[in-house]
Image (cartoon, rainbow, N blue to C red; front, top):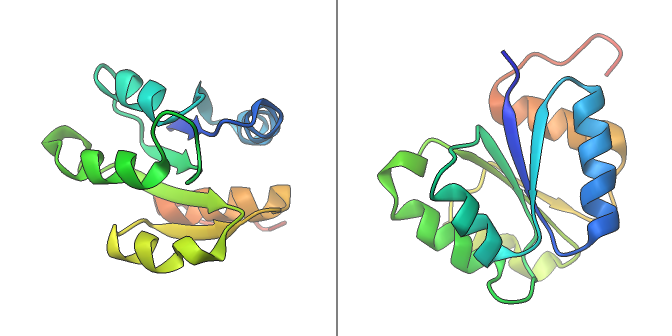
Length: 126
């Protein structure tokens, strides 16, 4: 069974890039353009993992993560924060994200982070 991953980022090119990388690895990927769209999606879907940007229009990653913590059905969802700003490190630690990554990252780094957050074994070539 393929894991479902939600990518939440306002940068369309990055969403497309992450989608291509993760689909090549066999994951099912959905996208949200901002935090408000992510919450709308999460009202009817429960992904295995969310890759979350922090600075987005309408509703940022921190607000989305706080709301996720309040929804019992989403408490087991893994979250990887992927941001360009180191200043969010402590906030992300407090919000109990699985991983904190700083852009830019390589395809190998994103795949390794996803596998780690989902508790999957790394592939021999990683």
